[in-house]
Length: 203
Image (cartoon, rainbow, N blue to C red):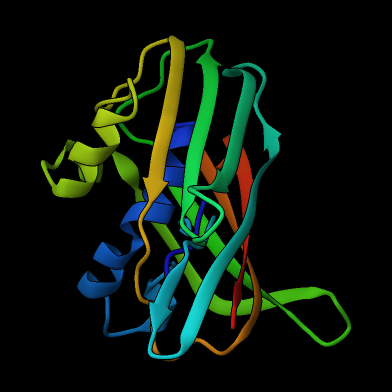
Protein backbone atom coordinates (compact mmCIF):
# COMPACT_ATOMS: atom_id res chain seq x y z
CA UNK A 1 0.00 0.00 0.00
CA UNK A 2 1.24 3.48 -0.73
CA UNK A 3 0.55 6.58 1.34
CA UNK A 4 0.35 9.82 -0.17
CA UNK A 5 -0.36 12.22 -1.53
CA UNK A 6 3.38 16.85 -4.04
CA UNK A 7 7.17 19.56 -5.98
CA UNK A 8 3.56 20.56 -5.71
CA UNK A 9 7.04 19.52 -5.03
CA UNK A 10 4.50 19.64 -3.26
CA UNK A 11 2.60 18.39 -6.21
CA UNK A 12 5.35 15.93 -6.90
CA UNK A 13 5.54 14.93 -3.28
CA UNK A 14 2.01 13.72 -3.54
CA UNK A 15 2.81 11.63 -6.60
CA UNK A 16 6.13 10.66 -5.06
CA UNK A 17 4.41 9.26 -2.01
CA UNK A 18 1.57 7.69 -3.92
CA UNK A 19 3.63 6.08 -6.65
CA UNK A 20 7.05 5.41 -5.16
CA UNK A 21 6.75 4.53 -1.49
CA UNK A 22 7.15 0.82 -2.14
CA UNK A 23 10.68 1.57 -3.28
CA UNK A 24 11.41 2.97 0.18
CA UNK A 25 9.65 0.04 1.87
CA UNK A 26 11.91 -2.41 0.04
CA UNK A 27 15.00 -0.36 0.82
CA UNK A 28 14.14 0.22 4.48
CA UNK A 29 12.22 -2.97 5.20
CA UNK A 30 14.17 -3.67 8.41
CA UNK A 31 11.76 -1.35 10.24
CA UNK A 32 8.17 -0.32 9.56
CA UNK A 33 8.91 3.01 11.21
CA UNK A 34 11.14 3.83 8.24
CA UNK A 35 8.39 2.94 5.76
CA UNK A 36 5.56 5.16 4.74
CA UNK A 37 3.91 4.78 3.00
CA UNK A 38 3.67 8.71 1.15
CA UNK A 39 1.79 8.10 0.97
CA UNK A 40 2.99 9.91 0.75
CA UNK A 41 4.03 9.28 0.54
CA UNK A 42 0.82 11.92 2.46
CA UNK A 43 -1.46 9.16 0.45
CA UNK A 44 -2.79 5.60 -0.34
CA UNK A 45 -3.47 3.98 -3.72
CA UNK A 46 -5.87 1.18 -4.55
CA UNK A 47 -4.41 -2.30 -4.37
CA UNK A 48 -5.33 -5.91 -3.79
CA UNK A 49 -3.64 -8.47 -1.57
CA UNK A 50 -5.39 -11.80 -1.35
CA UNK A 51 -8.96 -10.87 -0.45
CA UNK A 52 -8.00 -7.48 1.01
CA UNK A 53 -8.61 -4.31 -0.90
CA UNK A 54 -7.26 -0.77 -0.53
CA UNK A 55 -9.58 1.93 -1.86
CA UNK A 56 -8.38 5.50 -2.06
CA UNK A 57 -11.08 7.99 -1.14
CA UNK A 58 -9.66 11.48 -1.69
CA UNK A 59 -6.63 13.77 -1.59
CA UNK A 60 -6.61 17.39 -0.49
CA UNK A 61 -4.35 20.39 -0.09
CA UNK A 62 -4.57 21.39 3.57
CA UNK A 63 -2.17 24.35 3.49
CA UNK A 64 0.34 25.94 1.14
CA UNK A 65 2.96 28.68 1.36
CA UNK A 66 1.64 31.51 -0.82
CA UNK A 67 5.13 32.98 -1.12
CA UNK A 68 5.98 29.95 -3.28
CA UNK A 69 2.69 28.62 -4.66
CA UNK A 70 -0.34 30.06 -6.37
CA UNK A 71 -3.67 28.32 -6.95
CA UNK A 72 -2.66 24.70 -6.21
CA UNK A 73 -5.33 22.26 -7.34
CA UNK A 74 -5.68 18.50 -7.49
CA UNK A 75 -8.48 16.08 -8.16
CA UNK A 76 -8.71 12.29 -8.13
CA UNK A 77 -11.43 10.44 -9.99
CA UNK A 78 -12.27 6.88 -10.99
CA UNK A 79 -10.70 5.60 -14.20
CA UNK A 80 -14.12 4.18 -15.11
CA UNK A 81 -17.33 3.03 -13.43
CA UNK A 82 -16.23 -0.59 -13.04
CA UNK A 83 -12.88 -0.19 -11.25
CA UNK A 84 -11.34 1.42 -8.18
CA UNK A 85 -8.31 2.58 -10.18
CA UNK A 86 -7.81 6.32 -9.70
CA UNK A 87 -6.57 9.05 -12.03
CA UNK A 88 -4.81 12.22 -10.86
CA UNK A 89 -5.02 15.72 -12.32
CA UNK A 90 -3.16 18.54 -10.57
CA UNK A 91 -1.71 21.96 -11.27
CA UNK A 92 -0.04 24.93 -9.58
CA UNK A 93 2.03 28.01 -10.31
CA UNK A 94 5.45 28.15 -8.67
CA UNK A 95 6.23 31.79 -7.81
CA UNK A 96 9.86 31.24 -6.73
CA UNK A 97 12.64 28.87 -7.71
CA UNK A 98 13.08 25.89 -5.40
CA UNK A 99 16.50 24.62 -4.26
CA UNK A 100 18.13 21.26 -4.97
CA UNK A 101 17.04 19.90 -1.59
CA UNK A 102 13.30 19.55 -0.93
CA UNK A 103 12.37 17.47 2.09
CA UNK A 104 9.17 15.51 2.67
CA UNK A 105 7.80 14.13 5.93
CA UNK A 106 4.85 11.74 5.92
CA UNK A 107 2.91 10.64 9.01
CA UNK A 108 0.16 8.03 8.84
CA UNK A 109 -2.99 8.10 11.00
CA UNK A 110 -5.69 5.47 11.56
CA UNK A 111 -9.34 6.19 12.34
CA UNK A 112 -10.53 4.75 15.64
CA UNK A 113 -13.96 3.66 16.80
CA UNK A 114 -14.72 7.22 17.96
CA UNK A 115 -14.34 8.41 14.36
CA UNK A 116 -11.12 10.31 15.13
CA UNK A 117 -7.73 9.84 13.46
CA UNK A 118 -4.86 8.86 15.75
CA UNK A 119 -1.14 8.51 15.03
CA UNK A 120 -0.24 5.16 13.48
CA UNK A 121 3.42 3.98 13.78
CA UNK A 122 4.34 4.61 10.14
CA UNK A 123 6.29 7.70 9.09
CA UNK A 124 9.15 8.76 6.87
CA UNK A 125 11.33 11.78 6.10
CA UNK A 126 13.35 12.00 2.87
CA UNK A 127 14.85 14.34 0.29
CA UNK A 128 12.83 13.75 -2.88
CA UNK A 129 15.33 15.25 -5.33
CA UNK A 130 17.76 12.28 -5.48
CA UNK A 131 14.88 9.95 -6.29
CA UNK A 132 13.57 12.27 -9.00
CA UNK A 133 17.02 12.23 -10.59
CA UNK A 134 16.93 8.45 -11.06
CA UNK A 135 15.77 6.93 -14.34
CA UNK A 136 13.12 4.39 -13.35
CA UNK A 137 9.83 3.20 -14.85
CA UNK A 138 8.00 5.26 -12.22
CA UNK A 139 9.84 8.52 -12.91
CA UNK A 140 9.51 7.91 -16.65
CA UNK A 141 5.76 7.47 -16.28
CA UNK A 142 5.54 10.62 -14.20
CA UNK A 143 7.43 12.64 -16.82
CA UNK A 144 5.04 11.40 -19.51
CA UNK A 145 2.08 12.93 -17.66
CA UNK A 146 3.72 16.05 -16.27
CA UNK A 147 5.99 18.94 -17.19
CA UNK A 148 7.90 18.47 -13.91
CA UNK A 149 11.26 16.77 -14.38
CA UNK A 150 14.21 17.09 -12.00
CA UNK A 151 15.31 19.45 -9.25
CA UNK A 152 15.82 22.34 -9.09
CA UNK A 153 12.34 23.50 -10.09
CA UNK A 154 12.15 27.01 -11.53
CA UNK A 155 9.22 29.35 -11.18
CA UNK A 156 6.43 28.75 -13.68
CA UNK A 157 3.27 26.73 -14.27
CA UNK A 158 3.31 22.98 -13.56
CA UNK A 159 0.74 20.24 -14.07
CA UNK A 160 0.03 16.52 -13.89
CA UNK A 161 -2.55 15.35 -16.42
CA UNK A 162 -4.51 12.07 -16.41
CA UNK A 163 -1.93 10.07 -14.50
CA UNK A 164 -3.23 6.63 -13.51
CA UNK A 165 -2.31 5.74 -9.93
CA UNK A 166 -1.30 2.11 -10.25
CA UNK A 167 -2.81 -0.56 -8.05
CA UNK A 168 -0.22 -2.15 -5.77
CA UNK A 169 -0.33 -4.68 -2.98
CA UNK A 170 -0.53 -3.34 0.59
CA UNK A 171 2.01 -4.44 3.21
CA UNK A 172 0.71 -7.54 5.02
CA UNK A 173 1.04 -6.04 8.51
CA UNK A 174 -1.47 -3.21 7.96
CA UNK A 175 -4.85 -3.83 9.59
CA UNK A 176 -8.20 -3.16 7.99
CA UNK A 177 -9.72 0.25 8.57
CA UNK A 178 -9.62 3.88 7.47
CA UNK A 179 -6.26 5.63 7.12
CA UNK A 180 -5.07 9.15 6.52
CA UNK A 181 -1.54 10.11 5.44
CA UNK A 182 -0.40 13.69 6.02
CA UNK A 183 2.54 14.86 3.91
CA UNK A 184 4.54 18.00 4.70
CA UNK A 185 7.14 19.29 2.25
CA UNK A 186 9.69 21.86 3.28
CA UNK A 187 12.99 23.50 2.43
CA UNK A 188 14.06 23.68 6.06
CA UNK A 189 12.37 23.44 9.45
CA UNK A 190 11.33 27.11 9.32
CA UNK A 191 10.20 27.15 5.70
CA UNK A 192 7.31 24.79 4.98
CA UNK A 193 6.00 24.56 1.42
CA UNK A 194 2.85 22.46 1.41
CA UNK A 195 0.72 20.14 3.53
CA UNK A 196 -1.48 17.52 1.84
CA UNK A 197 -3.65 14.68 3.12
CA UNK A 198 -4.88 11.52 1.51
CA UNK A 199 -7.54 9.14 2.77
CA UNK A 200 -8.07 5.44 2.04
CA UNK A 201 -9.83 2.33 3.33
CA UNK A 202 -8.35 -1.13 3.71
CA UNK A 203 -11.21 -3.61 3.52
